[in-house]
Length: 432
Image (cartoon, rainbow, N blue to C red; front, top):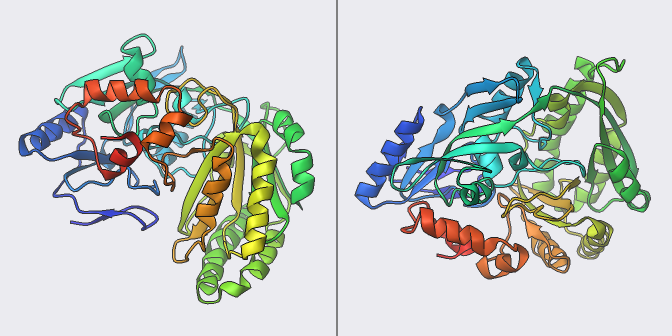
């Protein structure tokens, strides 16, 4: 049996596949794997670009382990099964009058996968999704279920919120939500250097700042999303405009241009210039999760690093200069976002305000050395790689970047001494 991730750049060959519907079925499957002496890996939507979920042992597909199991309206907390996709969770929370305080721009991931790899979103006064976790349940290597929170098994809790699937299988997550809210979105094109001049002010002024810079041009699509009260007069995008921008231009036409670029990479600078102009200014107001999320049908590979917020302009200029010098035909825009510091041991934002810079390439095209060059540039600024996106760093380098790396490994040694949940990728980034 062959498993392939969403991007198509990772494959594995599990000897057994199980689709548990309840936490006790997860435990039973782990015990079967233990009896056979094979490793175990859980997989949600397969949206990670790394091999973090790959296994040649037992693959636990969590798509059936889905749904809200409990709601505490007084505290604004919900418990959800680990395989619940974000695109199912978000409208369910909205129906309860609740929302997650921050989201990324893709909602295909399972909640367990999103927190385990540090999915973050944008907003300097906010944190990534894992910061909203107030408790979780792990199915351990011995088949037992362990509940943890800030007050119960606190070290396990700190390690498991961004745990890379290395400690066990997350069967259930408790999320601290906020009252449902609306966002006013203002999107417009701008010059890259003008954006960099005012970037500090923009990040401090707006609740959520997201920028898409088109390689081999100096054009940026800027997105400012700000919270508004219930009386704000703004309305959602008209259906025709959403269909034009988000379906036709950003997906159907973009897929066609990428296929063309695969055959004729020399046209990429011109295509990027046209793309930057086609996605024009727009302004609308909608429920938070509808504004945060964009539909991505065109497949790609991605590398993303977090660097200290103050380094963002230096990194962007260095990347721009390298791309101009080497004329690397990247067809996807680079994305720039900002997130506040948190206290999660393996979070990219551990005790540091970050700028996140993501470089992409169409899945059928070579990156022409751009990913390696990007990685070398961010290395000069203590760049921390997104755990679900492409990078080459090993355990020795990651130990230097994460002050609590050793504490995480101590929890792993205690919970999974036989490395039931290991694979080659985890051996590389965490050590054996």
